[in-house]
Image (cartoon, rainbow, N blue to C red; front, side, top):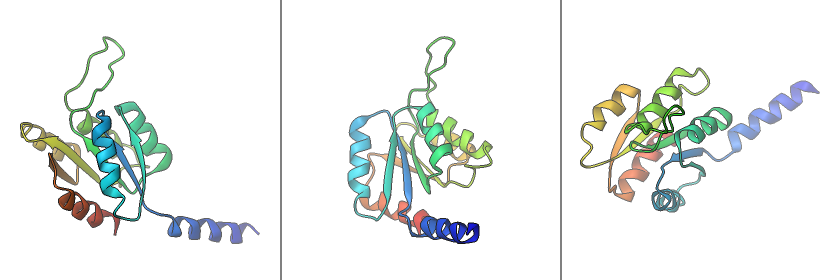
Length: 146
């Protein structure tokens, strides 16, 4: 009986839609990304801060993470914010055995060219600049979900 249940759970994992984690502190960007991703068969889960994004990634193990480079990161001691929170999330994912294989796309604004090397150093697979073209985004997403 246990063998049958194991087989069923593997089949369920194989048959499920890919899961995409989106982390951005801008609700408009989250909605826009969700709207663009409706064109491909996937499920989307969203986070608006670093802590939630990491928690979701560990608990749900998405097939892809799309992370905003500039997102508030709460620092308990003083309520300060890190300007490169997307890279921080990526580093956390890469340092965790259960999440290190999740492909990561970092989104950054044009003026943040200094953030691009930071995102690559953090272990991002790709980066796209905001504003992004929906076709470019879908092309990169499909590359990792196939």
